[in-house]
Image 1 (tube, rainbow over the protein chains, first blue to last red):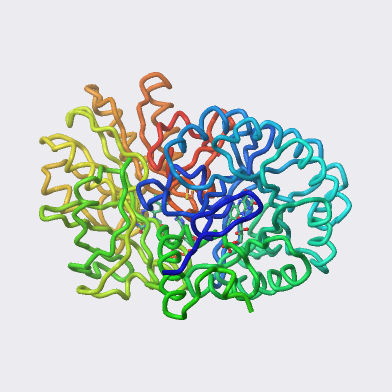
Image 2: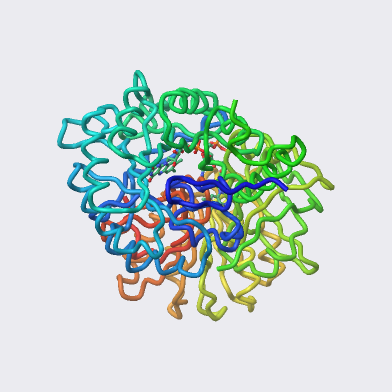
Length: 300
Length: 264
Ligand SMILES: Cc1cc2nc3c(=O)[nH]c(=O)nc-3n(C[C@H](O)[C@H](O)[C@H](O)COP(=O)(O)OP(=O)(O)OC[C@H]3O[C@@H](n4cnc5c(N)ncnc54)[C@H](O)[C@@H]3O)c2cc1C
Ligand SMILES: Cc1cc2nc3c(=O)[nH]c(=O)nc-3n(C[C@H](O)[C@H](O)[C@H](O)COP(=O)(O)O)c2cc1C
Ligand code: FES
């Protein structure tokens, strides 16, 4: 019988399948459709200090096997997250990961501190390092190893929860960034967030999105995500959580072989809410058939 | 609200006109739970990834024996794909989703549908259990687009039609019919329901407020938005509220009190 459980520092997951932030809401919305207890983990919608209304519509645009989104990180803010959303997940036995975002290192630290007080429920914190850093003139945090180190070091000081650094693929070279995460104490790296893209409405001769650019996700980005996972896992020793275009168990196996310890399912939840559960079954079946005992045995 | 993700057998699929189709599936759980105004998300490409996203369609009717039907117009890739499915094939359907119209006493309502927006209104009319004298106003571009008239007439509704080109019924807009109704009917019904293009619903809202005043205008509208999930997890389906907030059409709607909406 294969053992699907994995460890990410002090974090134990019963299996390596996690739902990706922004694609499973606050978790509870999916309770009718899948057995939340069967998941390795749930990475909840990105939370900021203040509620964010998000961007004006249109917020999505379908592309060939992909999805462009410009949601604008709409969320209820940390206060309502803690008072209204978290209690709804009280009775579920899955690993709850909070995903946070801020405009400055200070905001990440403050958020981590607030969440640490709920370590009975929250088992890890994922830092969304792809958001525009307003204080630094619009560069994404994720492109600057110095800023990333500052955030991770600061967050690690205020919490004992495992810290996962979620990285942007919109960079020249992921290696110095992954290395900076490891050196500043991140417990794991998750990647990729969405790829910057755009679409044009040819009849109106205008970009589809008000912000012109949007984030591409879905099956279309899988080869790119897999490349990032390969590069990062060969550059650092901390666990890598692979994300990007995973919609079937075969995709998941590719990520484990490329060096991922766990995976997250994003866009697939939209067109197939049962994707995660089917993928867990598929991984189990494949491991049994091929004689793999642990997830890590699949690594190339 | 409970919903189900089912692989449903297509029991019939009929082309009603050049681009309008009537699809019926066997989905007992959905049929039993469904309320008028709710919708389903339909995977139109089987296990393939193109088109990637499900397509939202309103529940047009439910039938004894656990059947659910949809009435839709082919407008792009997804609906074209759907139209190629045949009776006997399976279709992945998620529903029922969203909120629903409030059911009011038959003698107090007017139902107003524009174009393919009539789809959910037949189910509504059935649940309101029409009596003689209940009024349905339908607006279409032309005769080709006209549908559901017999469905309403079978329910003994007084059904008035407007077409923009005058090829059937009144020549002009649905708001002409509505103004007439309001003016010639001192014994006014109190509740209005609409579904159709945003511009049409906006015009209806304006007209009702103009004629009856904010206080007496009780209008429920059904809105559309681009949707990825249909279940409230992606935050893509927003429409703006009058108070500046965003409303999520798949969860807070698709049915809204017209007073809540920013009609820009
Ligand atoms: C709650 C709800 C109920 C609906 N009920 C019906 C119905 O009963 N009958 C019917 O004919 N149509 C209905 N629609 C509209 C229907 O969903 C669109 O016509 C359909 O999604 C178009 O897909 P397409 O691939 O053919 O068009 P394309 O234009 O190629 O689609 C591209 C993308 O835009 C989205 N899109 C395009 N038009 C619309 C629209 N009007 N509303 C929402 N998304 C859109 C598509 O879903 C897709 O993601 C409903 C929409 C909503 C939101
Ligand atoms: C609609 C949408 C919203 C998202 N919101 C967030 C978010 O709030 N925080 C975050 O870190 N990532 C967010 N993401 C990125 C996903 O978590 C994931 O990294 C990305 O979509 C790639 O995976 P996929 O191809 O499986 O979707 C979002 C993605 C989508 C499609
Ligand atoms: S369609 Fe996903 S939240 Fe409404």
